[in-house]
Length: 325
Image (cartoon, rainbow, N blue to C red):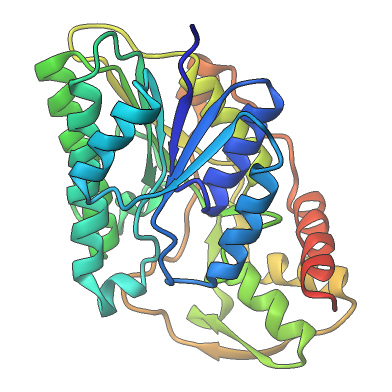
């Protein structure tokens, strides 16, 4: 009997796309999400409506900080031998306003997932979301997983680094195979409304001013959602081995794009020019991100394919269709 794959944060942006791809490949998927109101819950429910069209999908509203609820899920829907753990409190800026949400979801929740996997006989692989934000103020580019990441510039980054440390200890103590992926600025259809590209598209389409931080002097390794999902699924099917079977891999595009060039593509796709308010750098933000993906390429045969021109074309097409403008 094949066991279903568990995806935490299944109503989220990356979780939704990953669940959809696995369902299309014929896997059974159990998705959980606490459906919090950090951003528009209507969007999360619309994603779930699409997933529910597949008979191999089952959803439960569960907060990963609730250990008894997870234990009940394992008992009724599991056991789960493969887990893609994406549920987390996201957002660098929000971590400055509401730090306790990050401890509950990103630390307690991650520990709960580790405990559930540890107590599952024959557990195969836990794939979990880390973040490029762990690189903090590192100035050596591109960011490589071999770099020291002990100077986080936001609480969000600190929680993600803590998750990596907890995961390593569980791999060492209990032999649980784990892969942590450091995501680099993921974008695409059904994306997160708090992300810059989404905010830009909304403001430009409504004729409102967009806020451009560090006066536009920023670069990001923008990674299209399909490339990320491809890497996640390849990772899930390729667990690490050894005494402490744990690894960290970058999931990026290996290109660093100027923020103003990215905005220009959105303007072109929307057919409108942005009114820009140029502002200083925000607390907790970094000037540039750029992923060294050589290890990910070697281990997983990972090869990002989508340019920002093609990716933003798909995003804006979805954005117009979803919001009807």
